Amino acid sequence: MRKFLVVLDDSRECLNAMRFAALRAAHTGGGVTILSIVSPDEFQTWMGVADLMRAEARERIEAHFEVFAKWMRDKQGVNPELVIREGDPLAEILALINEDSEIGVLVLGAGTDKAGPGPLVTALSRASGSLPVPITIVPGDMAKDRLESIT
Image 1 (cartoon, rainbow, N blue to C red):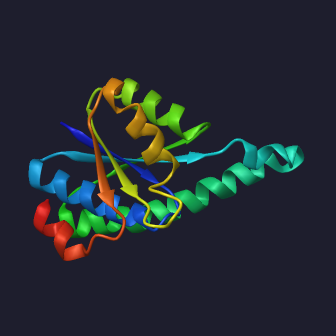
Image 2 (image 1 turned 45 degrees about the horizontal axis):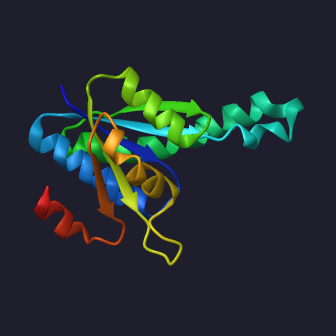
């Protein structure tokens, strides 16, 4: 089964990337893998409580994931899987793509502010010629009905 890989973060554009991946998976009989990446820098300042902070980060990620997962299951009939990694986002995305041969498309949401589309979109666009899978970049401000019509 071909899977769509989506990165879960706190950005506004993440929502459109999730919607796109779920709708495409539903229409093509595919699956969705949701990757959340925690920066190890978050835990280095507080070495004594690093394990507790990791557990709290994991709980926060799982709660955030469950909101998307419930919508995907209930509305699209897609049961997504969650992968949580710690490290550099670009390296972790590439590692997961290389480890999971079912991942066929990377879906990213593009930011809409003046700073540009976001660091992942920028970095992965530059490397797109050598990536093992295609990238779909979903505009962060695309309307829900427009998104549904193109999937």
